Every structure is written in C-alpha cells, then in structure tokens.
Length: 451
Image 1 (tube, rainbow, N blue to C red):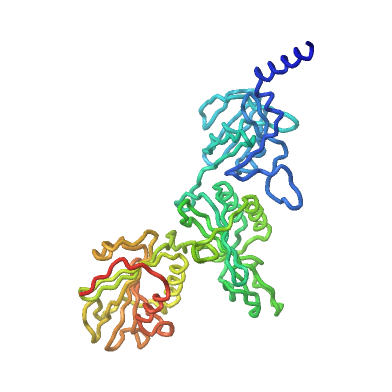
Image 2 (cartoon, rainbow, N blue to C red):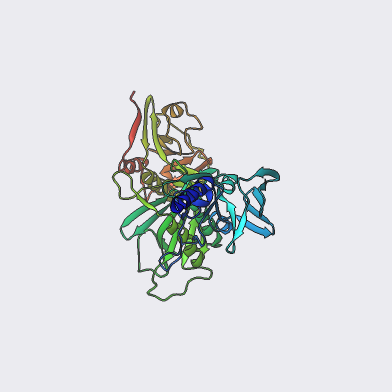
C-alpha cells in the first residue's frame, strides 16, 4: 500500500510540474538544422560548442547567453542584474529574475525569467531568437530546439546559403551549406582578414603551374548565394605554390591572396582557418549540375549575375536571337570578349550601321547581350535599352581603309558604357570568327526570321 501511495505521489508531481520533469532530459540545439556540438575535440575545431546544455523551465527552453554571442555574433553585455543583447539594429535587455524584457525601448513579457546556474546565465531561447528575427522549431521526438535564421542582405541581395568551389588538379567540386547564419559568420570572418589592396601577381591561374616563381593558384571560391542561386558576392582564394627558384615574395604579398571584383588583396592565414572552421560546422553537401561533376555559379560584373547571353543578328529584314544559359559558358565568353578588346578608340567618323553597305562602312554583324534575366525577343526587336545589362555591338569594315589603323578592321561598341574598342585581330581576324567561337557552346534559338 505504501509503494502504491508513493507511486501516486510521484505521478501527481509529474502531472502538476511537467516542466521540471522534462528538465532532466537532455535537450540539443541546432541552427538551420546544423547541430551545435556538445564538446570540442582535436577533430572538432568548430568555433562554438555546448559547454552547458539547454534547460527546460516552466515549459520554456533556456540556453546559456554566451551561445547567443558565439553563434549568432551578437554583442552581449552584463551589468547585473541586466543582460543586454545587441545584433544589428536590435537590442534586447533582460533582467535576472524578471519576466519583463525590453526590445528597442519597448517592454515585452517573457514566458519565464532569466536565471543563473552553475556559473552560466540562462535566457529563454524562443524569445531571444524571435526578437532577432529568427524562427524557433521544437522537435519533440528528438528533444531538439532548431533555430531557423533569416536571410541577410549583401549587395542588395538576400543571402540564404554559402557555396565553396574547390579545384583539385583537373577536377572541380562544389559544396553548399544552406544556412543564412553560417554564411553570415563565414563572410564576416573572411572580410576581417582582408588586408591591403595589391597589384595582380605576376603569375597566377586556375591550373597548377610549378614552373614560374611565386605562382598563385586559384584554389577555390566562396559564393554567397540567394535562394534562387544568384550570387551576392564571390571571394576568390589564390594560394602560393612552391617556389623552386627561392625568389622572395614582393613586399606586402602573403601566402593567400583574395580577388574580389577583379581587385587583389593580401589575406591573413589565421583568418582563413577561422572561416574554414565555420564552414566545417555546416555539414556541407556536394552539388552537381546536369552533365557536370560540379555546379557552376554565375560570374558577377558590377553587381550583375551573368546568367544569360543573347546573340542577336539583324541584317536587312532577317532577324535571329540565340540564348546561352549555361553560366560557365557565359562566363567564359565574357572573359574571352574582355581579353579581346585591344584598345579603346573614339566613335568612328566613318559611317556604320546594319545596312547593306560594303565600301568604307562599318557593318554591324551581331550584338551580344549579357544579362541576369532571360532575354526577351521583343526587347531586341524593339531595340529596347533594357534588353540586356551589358550590350556589345560587333562591326567590321569589309572594304576600305579602317579608320584607326590596319588593325581596326573590326570594332566593338559597348552600349552600356558608350565606348568603342578595336577587336584584337590576333584573337579574331574577323567578327564572324567570334561568332564561330560561340558555336562551340550550346544555345537555344529564341527567334529566327529570314527575309
């Protein structure tokens, strides 16, 4: 009878005080589905781990406030009994033992009060996370709290994930971590290590070359991506390979260099290790594009993702429009074009256009339009200025004296900058040779009208 009474008493305690009963169970924590490690070992060099596990009180999950600082990058300040948590434009003030909190000057009620235990200060994670624009998910079967962080803005785009593209001799591998939080922490870590701007190294490339001294190899790129895979920023990492000539590095150059938007910077080895530690947290997954062993990402020029290339021809009443949508192909073509512009010249005084002229006339053969959005045939037919983000017109003098010297038989007009260039005859002797180069890449025909 006494045993029965004891059982009933325990059962009543469990029913009346469910929060305290659950508190004994181990609670795990995750951010964007990425588990927070419970210890740090030689193999686990992640920037954070659970020194003290989350606790349940009054049906509310509490975590050590230090985790908010270490993981989310928030600034945490103590002025007992108050705790201030600041992230971006949001500041939360909590008070030990009080259910009243203040967010950006406005009082709010907490489900339970913050407290101290075992040398740690515990705060209600749902309130804090939601106040910092995150969503909170309680997975009862796993006894897990998952904090879903919000996309953050970078160069006018909302970043949701980070990708790494790694080159290993002749192979390329692409990996992604779908976490706005880890993308943010990686970006900030990488930015903190960027040093002085430098001139481009004398020798560099995307293929390993051990012959020239102080050769920098394009080992990988970090892409900060939107949900639809547009690139908000790309940070290219170049690593110094072995120097068989034992030549000293030029002053200011480091083992690793960063290239961002075509500019070169010195970079800290230690900071790169810290950034890679954030990457290692993310449990990255390998991604591939159809027909490729890796996933290509768009080249970014002046903040524009070069997702598409349109090739438009108009001569007489004939019209044709081809669309190239493979991002790697578009990037290659853009780079080839840029490298083939020999020198800038003035607008030609010689007549030019899309007429059937031959003598002393620069004939328009076709135009190339690089754009973030898919090209529309109507925009090209109507000669809309918004048909592409970057438009280049190709002209050639078929008969007569080229205006800017013998090498200026072929000219390129960049409409977006209103500048004219000579097409390097060493690369393409005639504009149709550039069009033949385009035929090496797959395309979709959007328009074909023959007179």
